[in-house]
Image (cartoon, rainbow, N blue to C red; front, top):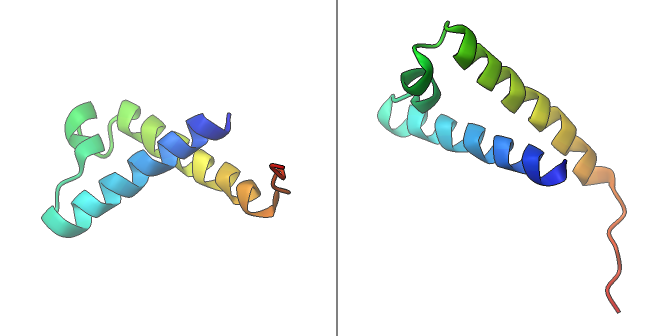
Length: 65
């Protein structure tokens, strides 16, 4: 679950980077615009993954000996 959440967060971060640098929304262009159902699902999954990743900040790390 952690890897999937991190992958979605990375996708979201890259998409925001493209928007800021080139005014190009990759998710919208791939899935038919910002208001299409599929784009909204992807945006929603990225948002949920971001919320899930907050928990990574507060987890105890395993100690490697």
